[in-house]
Image 1 (cartoon, rainbow, N blue to C red):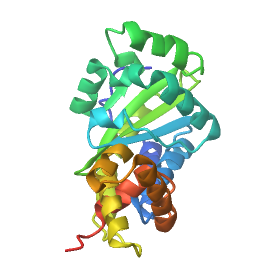
Image 2: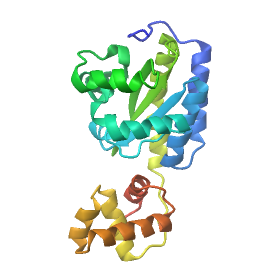
Image 3: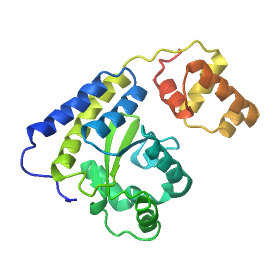
Length: 253
């Protein structure tokens, strides 16, 4: 896989793929729908086997996302192993890779240098075990409070050619415009008690159950139960989803 993006113009088909993905995500109505649609659309339009979506308040925090998203079951199984054993050794979270992501928004496995220790083991024992020979990461900011890292992986060494990488690079530069239009839409606030609203806002701050319990003078197990009730009341599937929604609710003042 080449390490440089092409200097020649993209082909018409490349632009059509980028526009198709942008059309897909432009039809979504929330950031969570944007996420799932984007992952599926990139997989289909670019014929990529595995696409992952990590998010956090910074690039470093995105790699620590406890609930990264993948649409395909095999990819989700790989993510479970990743979270259990390999997240701290991610080759794309190394200093060299993060530097490239900060500078260009894109990095491929071939471009990461000075692999040693855990990162080398990650490549040999995780990526190779899953037969992932084509690996790249892209980053963009869907809002001022969030950074996304998109991972694309395939068992075909030729899955991403130079023009594919260039097209994905063009796509990632346009994604913030779509995502920020969703982020600025007023989020509807479900019918919650004052205490439930307070709890949701503390979850949105990233506090653990123990930390919330200390703030509210309640037992950690009680907070855990209240969070479960809150998830059911808001229709959120995960704590991360609840945090994203609660951070967008208009102020109660």
